[in-house]
Image (tube, rainbow, N blue to C red; front, side, top):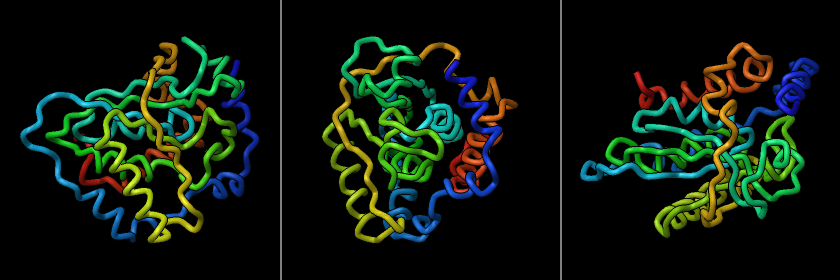
Length: 223
């Protein structure tokens, strides 16, 4: 039902509404963004690590991160709430406290956490805490759930630098919180864009974001 609602809403959107949701591209010119994007991976690292990001609808976030070299798997799910084992229907009410997030499993010998942070802040509008386009509510908040003190330090440091450089016309309001629990979303949410690319929501919202993401990270994509 909620998936169908998302698709139907998109059929009613005008081109003006869609363009109004586009993020400011100024961040690409900042020194901090360049530093993040060019951060070196750790050639000596071989084990898979996890990063957890919330950047609006997890269908979009998953589709973008799957493009990157070094990303082995992406799982869509829910984190940051107070209800145990929530369903999509429950999370969509905005009352469980959860955000739609993606667990990004990556090889740090190929892609660094710094580069993933760059991809994260590129993938959505981080100046809006509880809204991405026409998806509104705390479940769509901009958030980094850190798994280590190093991840926390880097996320906070880069957020501060991006704001100091005025990378966007408004302040970055991304929440940075400790990772506690991840509940994997229902099976039909996994690999959603690849499985449902012809649906209106995918065509009008997910695809433009993926296409833009590919242009920004052209040298870091899987072949």
